[in-house]
Image: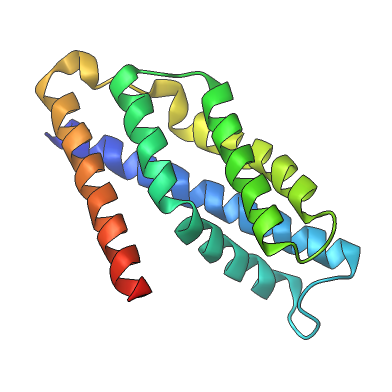
Length: 156
C-alpha cells in the first residue's frame, strides 16, 4: 500500500511539474511576443498560467493517467499527444492571440515529455504487484471523482 501512495505522489508531482513547465513557457512566450497582460510581469503570468493549466487539464489528465497505469502504457506518444490536445484546445478556446493554438501544441510537446520523463516511463509497474496496483487505481479513481465533484460544485 505504501508503494501505491508513493506512486500516486510521484504522479501528482509529475503533473504539477508539467503544469509548471506549461506556465513557464506561456509566460516566456507572451513576454517575448510583447503581448499578454500589459501590467503583469512575465513570471506573474507564468504562475497564473501554470495554475490555470493544472485546473483546466485535471479531469481529463486523471482519465489518461488511470488508463496508462491500468494498461501499463509507457509510450511517450500517449502523454505528448494528450498534452498537445489539451494545449491546442486551450489555445483555440482562449484565442488571446492568433498564434496561441499553435503555441499550445508546441507547449504540449514539452509538458507531455516532462510528465513522461518523471512518471510515464514507469506506468503500470504496480499492476504486476497485485494489491498495490489495485490500490493505486482506486486512489486515481477517487482522485478523479473528487476533482469532478469540486469542479461541479464550483460551477454551481
